[in-house]
Image (cartoon, rainbow, N blue to C red; front, side, top):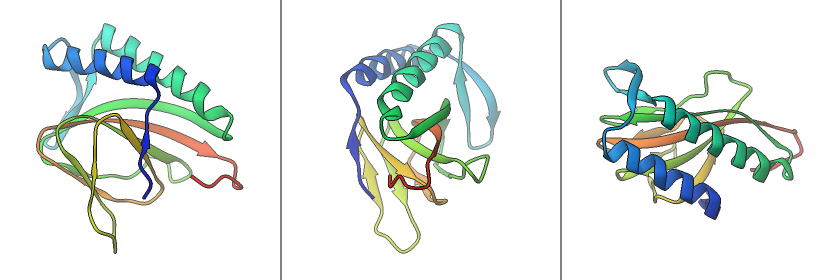
Length: 143
């Protein structure tokens, strides 16, 4: 699995998102026993801005961003795209996140990095906040 550093623009937006989370200035949406999706007017505006920036950055690679959300997990989660034709890009915001893939050693995901997934890994960590970017690619693109 290859980890890549996020752009400076994305770092600025994510830092502002992290501050809102740390100050408790977000809403908790779509909650369940494992965690929740973050919301709130200002936070959602930041998510939209981040999605727009990532969309522009990845267009040249024939990667088409179709959605972005930010989730909190109390004890990690099994990750799977809601639509099997889509793939995910994962960006950790807070906490120590570790990605566990079948047959591979666990990989810690440092903040200010991202990785592509097209399988169904387990994301482990206590009280972690993670951005998920759903995307589609042309079949000729290797991510």
